[in-house]
Image (cartoon, rainbow, N blue to C red):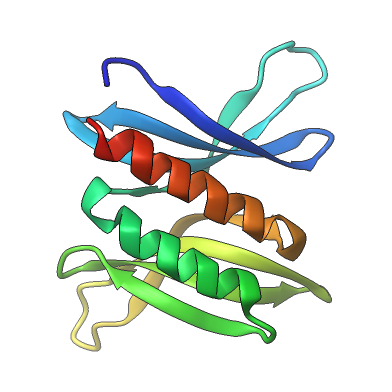
Length: 147
C-alpha cells in the first residue's frame, strides 16, 4: 500500500465524517479511524486529531469487538484490546449531556506508581452508525490483510 486508501466514510453530520483509511505511518501499515471536518471556506474534507489507529494484527479482534459494541444496550466498556504493554484500545458505549454514543479510544498507562490508564485520542459515532463502522472494519481487514 503506497498511498492512503480510503475504505469508508461514515457521515456524522453536515460538517463531520469518520473515515476508515488504510495507510502507512512511520513505516507501519495501519487502519486509521479518524474524524474529518468540512470547513465552510474550504471545498476539501480535513482530518482532525480525533482518531485511533489499529495495527493489522488486531483488526480481526477489532471487528469482533465492534460487532459487540453495535448490539450493546447499556452504557459501559464493551471490551479493550491490548496494544503492547502500555496501551490499549477501548471500545465503549458512553453518555455525555444525555447523548449516548459509541467510542473507540486509545488509553495509555501514565507511568506513575499507581499505573492508572489515561485516555488518549479517540473517535465517537452515534449508535445508529455503529453497524457502518463494523462493515468498514471488515472491509479494512480484507484490504489491509491483502498487503
